[in-house]
Length: 86
Image (cartoon, rainbow, N blue to C red; front, side, top):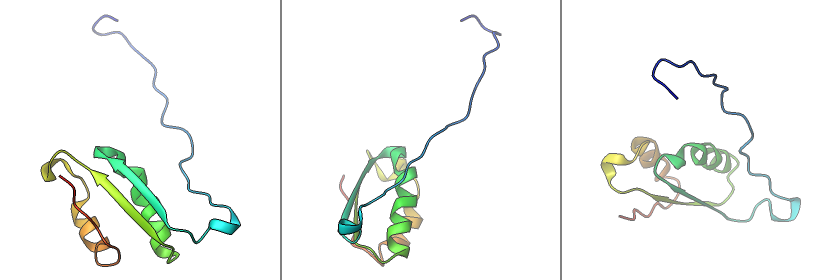
């Protein structure tokens, strides 16, 4: 591709949901994310907390400086146990 070439772009498409069968809907869910991959997990975490369903989160980052949403997770930490891993 040469400088100045025009390209097309289509937005992100698809679903990222957590659907549990009836028998395990209230089972503990473990969410695992690294770096900016935490973004979709935020929604899943919030949904589980709103429904008062058990959830754990493992969130890996290289440094606190690279961890988005820290204030939000500090608030969540009052509702669930958070275990920082460096």
